[in-house]
Amino acid sequence: MSDNKPVLLIDQDDVLAEYILGVTTAFNKKYHTQFSIEDCMSWDLCSVFGENIDTVMHEPEVFRNLIPAKNALQVFERLFHSGLFEMYIVTAANPRSVEAKYEWIAQYLPFFPQNRIIVCTHKFMIKGDYLLDDGMHNIYDFHKTGGTPIVFERPHNAHLIHDFVKVKDWLSFEKFIINACYKEKSSEYFSFEIEEAI
Ligand SMILES: [Mg+2]
Image 1 (tube, rainbow, N blue to C red):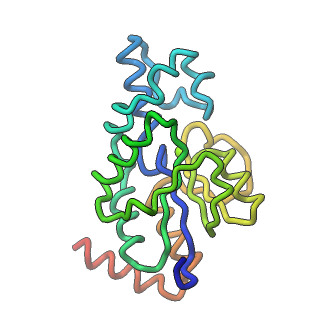
Image 2 (image 1 turned 90 degrees about the vertical axis):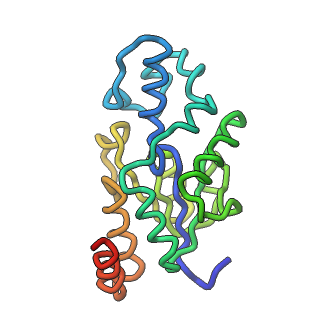
């Protein structure tokens, strides 16, 4: 526990890492199909790809090779090193993919303490102020427990109508979370980033 810093829970698949893209690519390669990520209009991949998706979606190699989402690593690192938040990665995982998911985080976010990774399917059981996630079931459940969910927009959730905060990318998330939690420090935070970027 920290000293009253806002607690951010961050999803891994399709928030930090391009999971649907990785699965689609691996599936197309294996089954000689031509699915695109825009075809994934449902979080239930079985309804998109059929039962064969089971042979791909938990493969450790798929998880190891996922590319980071645009600006995810930079923004995650900025937020982490700002010291303004207590951050956890909360990810649902099949037992087969757990090790590969830890390896991915160690490779791309090497500064992030391993003991702040929480493998958990029922994310609403984890206490936190904000949950950034693309899975609407997680969004609804987390809201019911009193937390503030933030929807990370993906093809499978972009068409859904709801009243939750939604962000289209990591830069939008950074703006939202700084303004929501530290409005008074917002210009200081972002001016530092501008200097850093020069
Ligand atoms: Mg996800």
